[in-house]
Image 1: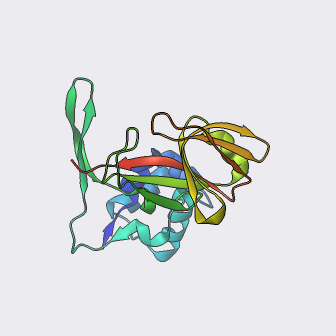
Image 2 (image 1 turned 60 degrees about the vertical axis):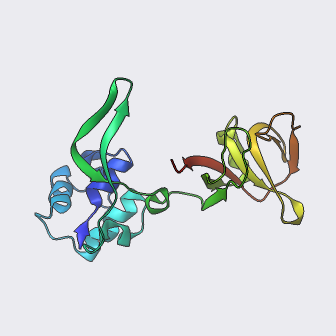
Image 3 (image 1 turned 45 degrees about the vertical axis):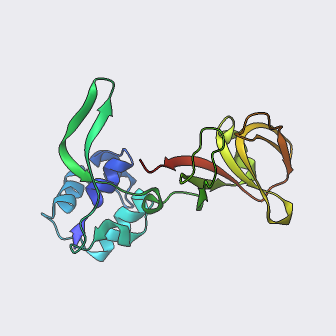
Length: 190
């Protein structure tokens, strides 16, 4: 089994010291570093402590050696792609966990900036957290098993105003939706 603590920690933008402090009870950055590199054995107890601090399931901290993992090898900047000092494993949003369920919206026809084949990954929020989603693309459930999708432009009381991505479409208003899913990632085949 391969230890994925460092890859998950870096994907979340957390330092060794921050992870050590987030553990319950807190530990030292050196201990986290030793666990990441395999210099210290990763027991079930340590897996549970570190997983809780990273807000992921404990089984996400290890993976099988049988299938190679997708790797992040470079970062793209204004001056062009730059190689990472050391490649790291690419972690999917569904593996990182976080509050709110993940939902995926499949695009079948061109609508606004979205193309057929696109997958839009969204994270569900409680309706009272809609303020975090203003001016972001959202998926909102409506009555009768239907949905509204587009830019969240307004919230007044229990009413949510969504502007669809297609040109010439008018605002849709949804009253008291059970949840709002905010777009976090667009996956597009090249």
